[in-house]
Structures are given as C-alpha cells and as structure tokens.
Length: 199
Ligand code: SAH
Picture 1 (cartoon, protein in one colour):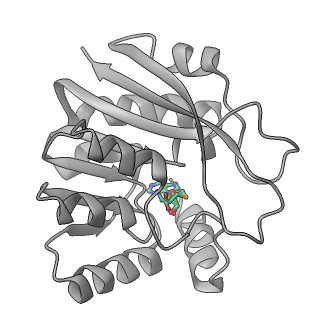
Picture 2 (cartoon, protein in one colour; picture 1 turned 45 degrees about the vertical axis):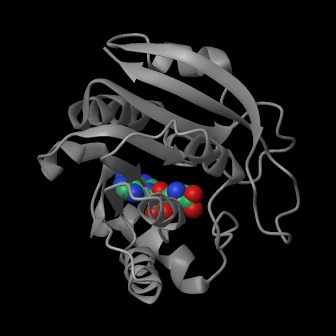
C-alpha cells in the first residue's frame, strides 16, 4: 500500500469520525469467542483501535493487531495499557503480512477485506496465506450486497468470497450477520461472516 493510502486511513482516525470505530468489538466476533472458536495465537488484521484483539487478550489468547493507521495503533496501545492487557500492536501493511515473519492459528478480519479493490483483494488473500498455519482459520466480516446504497465500503457477495478464496482455502461457512456502526452512519449494514480454513 502507498504512503498516501496509509495517510488517508490515518486521517479518518485523526478526525474521530470512523463509523466502524464503535468502542467495543463487533457482536459477531464476541459470539465466536464465546463459542470458543478462536484459537491462539490470533492476528487481528487491520485492527483499527484494537477492540477485537483486546477482547481476545482479555480471554487469555495471545493477540497481535496490525493496522496502517498510526493514530489507530496509538489508541489501541493506550487502551491495552489502560486495561492492563498485553497485546502487540504494530503499524503495518496487511497486504504484506509476510513481513511479520510469524504465523497464527487464527486471523480475524473485521471490515478490512471489503475496503480493497480487485487487485488488492487478490494481494490481501495471498498475504493472509503467509501468516496462517496450515489448517488455520480466518474469520472475515464484511458488508454484504444486502446493504442498501453505496456509502462506505464495497458490498461483497458470497460468490465473490468463494472466488477470492478458491485456491488454497476451504470455505466452511458463510453466515448472515450484522456489521455494527455508529448511530450517525445513515444505514444499518448487512454483513457476511465467513469461516475460511487454510489448506
Ligand atoms: N478492524 C477494525 C477496523 C476496520 S476499518 C474494526 O473493526 O474496527 C478498516 C481498517 O483497515 C482501517 O483501520 C484501516 O486503517 C485498515 N487498513 C486499510 N488498508 C490497510 C492496509 N493495507 N494495511 C493495514 N491496514 C489497513
């Protein structure tokens, strides 16, 4: 990703106006954690201000969060300190996760896959494959085509998810879910929550 793109994401956090930055984890991921589905160590890819990694660390998992926006990462680190949680938060490019030089049992993606254009989508999927152990699980929450209008990120269909993860992955489930946003966002997004296993 270019420096410009990093700066654009950072600016959203500086402005304080990120609709997805709801100050708590998405209910869809809390339910997965409650069900014991999330294995450790876990990477929160495009972690924003860190609520998912923090929620998982609170439950005893070893959690790492990576995001392009330095402002989001500073906020995430501050929250970890305030909550007495040990989480590694790093500024980085999720299109080049191989730079982490580590692998994870689980990767979670809350609202990141759906920000990329087709070319970056392909790069992202191959980047993810470099950090998941064989048999490791990716949980991905994205806007679905049932979300009205075209405000915000791309709408993603089940067919697009299946196409993106056709090679080297197995899609176990794709369930209808919601993506919680701040009240001032004009619509209530519909989402897909996918469980995708790396071969
Ligand atoms: N997962 C967070 C943030 C979702 S918004 C949450 O649920 O709150 C999408 C996030 O992806 C933003 O924080 C943005 O900074 C990050 N992002 C976008 N492109 C990125 C890239 N190439 N590398 C790392 N982070 C990226």
